Each structure stands twice: as structure tokens, then as C-alpha cells.
Image (tube, rainbow, N blue to C red):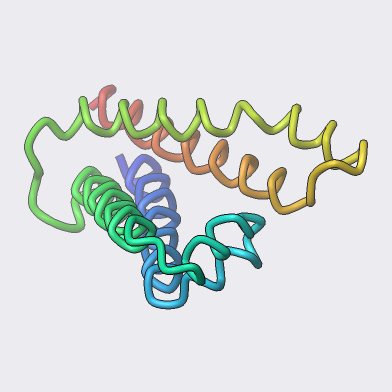
Length: 140
């Protein structure tokens, strides 16, 4: 159980870090350019009204995922549908992480920044942390 909690705390920390990152992007949408989404930065500079609400939605999503991981680790009270939500979160992260080989090929080919591969690797690792944490809970 202790190891499962550690995995969930690490995975939850990654989700909470993503929430903070997206909060920064909501406040300073020009920062999208640094993270490889220059078109979003351009739209924000042109006054697009949808970028900030969507980014704040991502803040809420990642923060909720982080709270579920902390709940699974026993750091906060149990949240509803805990095991089901943890497995769904892990599947979403892992599916995002499966882009890693393609991102690496595009990076080597010079059509992608290394950032895309780093983001995919981070998603894959985070998904595996959630999965290992969830499976540790399921075995108790």
C-alpha cells in the first residue's frame, strides 16, 4: 500500500504541476508559444475569447486529477468513484503518451521540437504512475 501511495503522490504531483502550468498559460497566453503552440499565442494576441476559458478548464481538469491521486494515496478523504476515476485518468495519460515514438521520429526528422517528445514521455510516465498506484490499491 505504501508504494502505491508513493506512485499516486508522484502522479498527482505531476497533474497538479500541469494545473499550475496551465494557470500560468491562462494568465499569460503568450507563453503558449514557448510550449510549441504558437498558433494559440497568436490567437490570444488577436483577442480570441475562447483560449482563456478552455485553458482554465484544463486547470480544473488537471487539479481534479491531482486531487484524485492524493485521495487514492490517502492524503485527503476518499473521493467518489475513486478507483474507476484513477484508471480512467491513467488510460488518458497513457494514450497521450503513446504519441512518443511518433514525436521522436518527427524530432529526429526535424519537423518537431523535442518539447513534443518530452510532453509525450511525461504523459506516459504520469499515466504509468497512476496505473501502478491504482493497481496497488486494487490489490489491497
